[in-house]
Length: 307
Image (tube, rainbow, N blue to C red):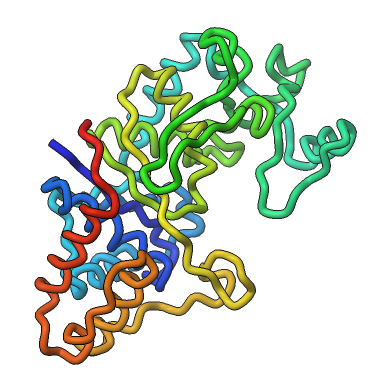
């Protein structure tokens, strides 16, 4: 069974960028006659807004995008993440870390690496061989040790839209966080565990998340989980040329009328380089017909890989 998913964080309402991800993942699942599941990535509870998850589900419903299974909430799945962390600890692939972000920044500057804007810090493995009397703050995946066991730190994969991809995780990321200093689970571990637990076969998400793929593939290897197929969609950009988000002016989707809903869905389809359907905009074409046309176009544009 082919299965895709849409996994937003309930930190506000859906906007134009998240609508693109939702529609793309839905089209992909339906093009391969599979299921489409919705999962709320609400691990970072301090950032989540009360009622946002329900508002998102209502927005999706207005657009005719309905989850084929009960909506899952990451905040209710802590036991699964703990179990995965314990497996990695037992294999010698996870270790406690005492470093603060400031200390890691100082270490980067000392190594002449600098700190690029919007980029994760490359962790140099300071606590890999022990805490040196300091108190543990977080847990990290031992990329160096796993790279040795697998024979290389290079990860190669095929993106269904972008083609062949590769990343040297040890040099470009370092030992990455599995459980944060504030006690919350890191995105990398949670998404890998959830995709496997829900038998997700095809992941379609924004291109800003492409850089996470190599880390997730390493975790899937270490936990002996089947990797899904990946496709990363074009990003919707804000006025400043960066990814559209609530931080740079993204406004909630206007779904206040049938016409507004059609315009929002057409904008998402256009961002995915699918047909502009004038009859859909003027109301003479039913939404289900428009979605069927886009689904057929998607299937031709991105032939799906079998699990």
